Length: 600
Image 1: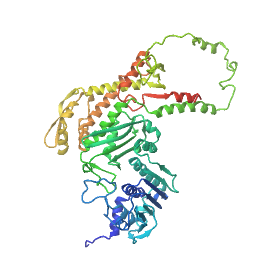
Image 2: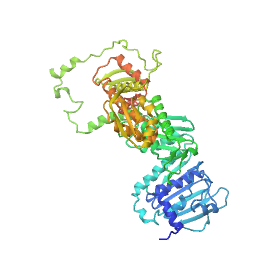
Image 3: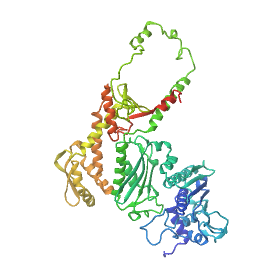
Image 4: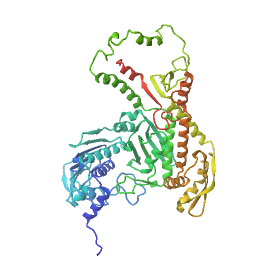
């Protein structure tokens, strides 16, 4: 068969298969164009989940007739010139508009500031109409109708209208977080209106619009820098977590991305602090020289490739762990809210469960249940009678600096122990309930983790070295980290071009599968250029030992022991959650308590 040049329409339809996967993909490309045009207000209207209608209206710089004529042609753009090393805009490929026009019915109306009238062009299934004058406000309106009508096979693979509308909503939320100074409005007959007013430079206020006010109360600010890479944003306290990773947002030079390296780094930073099956909430923004990141990995521009991935991953893990160490003893405020809600719901639910009767009423006469007989009265003999006599307090811990001039303690002073497991402490503005076993388990674990950094861990020599066959490039990577691995008690040597000999293994791990361990380490080093897998295994062992070496449930503590535990929690990183990610304490504000009793 002879080789021939494909038609321009078919070329655009092939390109559309990579760029425009679904209506949300088209919406993303058009919103990016609006942002690049300097818009401060962007309105998105949809119908049929974006399949019937997708209209993007912005107040950006707009285009004249000549610009419109070129904008719908492939590889025509105003955003780059000759190099891909200095991309500072969201769009740059010049493929979005012609790709959308090749599979849908597109009308673009635009007017530049200062022009007396606007211009309009239409592209239907790849066929472009001449540019014509049109009445228009400053900015651009792009209307996309009947997406994929020209490629019916693609239309069959779209999801329900509700699912497609949800994907557009998620895209708008990510863009809104990245650009808090822009006002976004998302509306249409297939959805309830979502309006996100501009918050200017207040990024946390915009994030609260998306993730809710609870995140604002449970966020720790991140601000770190390493070499030429800076990391800013907010990370939620470990006990403020979700059931999936949909609440993790990452941005590179202002571009929303869904990069595996970044998501893995977030997961690694929260290791040992978030329960299995739960995911932390985080919004992170990475800024670096455009020459050090490749955003041209895929036409959809959702993936990026860093020149130094190890540096970026290390920066994310280190910055989050430093932030958690700084404020890691905080517990999520939602725990206290849940406790207050449980109290509020308790009595009405029980009262409504059954009709009133004299036998079950809390106000029933005593004689109806034998209340004046000798057996029921016997219980009163163990009760202490009320007295007006006062006694000096047994302990001198101050809750507030306003009391007896003592030091301020954030977790307050212990007042009671319930069920030999829960410590109740009074704080400045409420109370905290501490799970003594979970709290002490975390304290012991952190002490053991610190011991791991004190020097080389004890190792055990293998009677017969374990020889493990690996690809030569994996052997090279592992040997480059041999010194680091030796600090953890893992001694390896090169055994020919394609094998590694393991002579010593960490004593803490006991009898292990050396082959599986080395292969896992090889995979991790190949991907991230770190040797954190072994450390994670050691810390898992440390967590297990800490669980067996901590204060057990059911043990009665003296007041000084309870207060000592509280003081140690205040100075220990990550003490707000146990090694399994569960909260170690719950805080209930005085205002919540007063609300329970109807005093506020």
